[in-house]
Length: 397
Image (cartoon, rainbow, N blue to C red; front, side, top):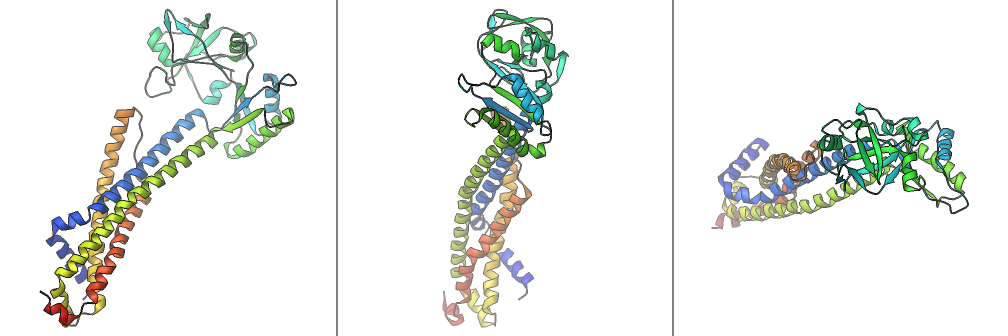
C-alpha cells in the first residue's frame, strides 16, 4: 500500500466519525490556541514596554547621589565637570529635582500634576518639543527665574489652549508660563504624561531648600552604553573614594530586566498551556486503542491478504498524526481569532494599545508539537494493531 493510499484511508476513517474525532482533538485545539495567544500576549507586552522605555530614552543614564556627610558633597558644577571629562562617552546632562507641595491654578489644587526642576538641556535629552512659547534657557537657570513650561493637558483643561503668559502657583509662589509642551501621550488625562510642569532646577532647589541629588545624562553612542556607564562610575568613585554614595542606572538595563521577567512569565504560562497538548495526546492514544479494538476484524483481513506489520503501523500512526495535525490547524486559526479579540479587549479595558501578535515561530512550533504528539501517542495503538494475530483477529466479533 502506498503512502497516498494510507493517507486517503486515514482521512476516510477520520471523516466517518466527525464527532468523536473533534472531541479527540479538542485538547490539541485548546493547547495550540492557548500557546499562540500567550506567546502573542508576551510579544505585545514586550513591544509596549520597549516603546514606553524608548520614550524615556534608552540612551540615558540616571545618577542618584547621596551626601557624604559633612566631609564632601557633589554639587552641580562638579557633575558637569565629570561629564565634560568623559565627553568621548557622555553628552548632555540635566539635574532633576522632583518637587512636592501644592500646585494651584486659580482656586483649584492639582493633586496629580508632577513638577520637576530641570536644566535647559532636559528637553533635548527626552526628545520633547514645545508647541507654543519657548523652552527653559540657561539664563533662567542663572537668574533662578520663576518661569515654567507646562504639559498639554494643563494647557487645554485649565487655560483653554492659551496658557502662555498666564500664571500658576507652586508652593505659594507665582510662576509665569513661558511654554507648552507638545502632546506626548495618546490620550490627555489627569496624572498622565502631559499633566506636568517643568521649571529651572535652580529655582526648584531654592524653593525646596535642598540639594540636587539626581541627574539625567545622555551617552554619545548607545552602542557603548556599558562603557559610558563604567566611565561615569569610575569618575564618581574617584570623587567619593567609595561606591556607597552614588548609583548609576540605565533605561536599557531596566528594559532588559522587564523583558526578561515577561519572557519568564510567558515560558511558565506556555508550559501550563502545554499540559493541554499532553492531555490531547493521551486522548488520541485512548481513541486509537478503541479504534484498534473496533477494527480488529479489518486488521485480520488485511494481514491475511498479505499486509505487512509496517503497513498496519503506518496506517494507524498516520490516522493519529492527521487527527492531531488537524487539531493543530484549527487551534492556530482559533489562536489568531482570540489574539485579535484580546487586542481589542485589552485596549477597551485598559486604554492601552497592546497588540497581541503571535510569531510565525510560535505557530510553527505549536503545529509541529501537535503533529508530533499524534505520532508519539499513536505509536502504541499502531504497534498493538500490527502485533495482532490474523487468525485471532478474524475470529474476533
